[in-house]
Length: 319
Image (tube, rainbow, N blue to C red; front, side):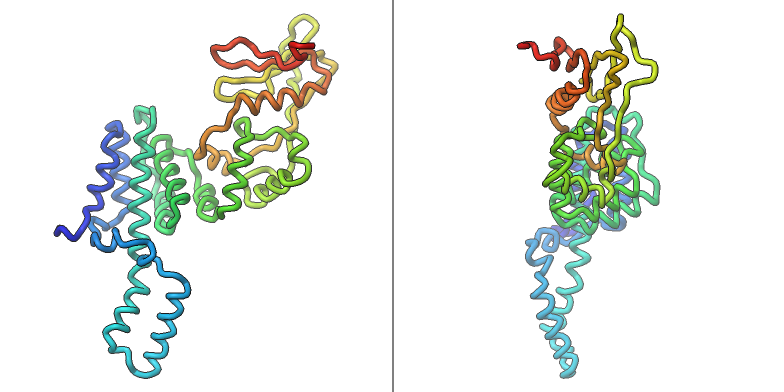
């Protein structure tokens, strides 16, 4: 390999230096499959600016028109014209190669942040990896490259974390939908959001319906009822409708009250995509959901978090 070329596997290997050995071995094996026969690539092409690699629509149309005119005039032997034609077709291959490399690099970085020892690490099956590679090579934006990198790292370290439907959905996720999902996910308590008045009308209702249309949330809200045989303490019953990351909502109620928690579930695809985002402030979200349940005739509502005393939400400590 000459100085004018970049060793692709070396680039990805360097990014994977800090991985635990079981993960590193699996990751490099998967990266080689994603990169295919792409052992090296011309440095000038991989380092060329985005503007030169991905021409504008107007520029492409102009060149296409010039080529059409040249063909009509039997002038296809013009060297400059032939070079212009090459610039139309070659960059697409370079763009796809560059996207695959960047996704693999980013995935190595994401995997290096894991706290797992890699005991369960395994390569995805062929169908999954083939579909992933097709989507990864078309991921030109940093947002998509980052999401696919997180997916690849997660799937290698925890096999089965992301299904084929999730890959397809990510590839079709436009910027506005991604933004709406991020805003709604920020209000989640794990696999659902509290069905509070905000989601019953207005902009939050519209966001919910839009996300339901693309399969990220359920189209109707659900209800979680108290258990048929609740834990009884004296004359009162105990119910924990929400539990996530060591925090839970504890509700003490008279059995005749029968409180219920109304919520909007995320779909499996939505939950998997949500796992790629920064975790919401679960404690704040659970607290708000608990306050909304105070109108249902319960006796006491507490927020329980690890290593902290119970926080009484209802009745208010000031009452």
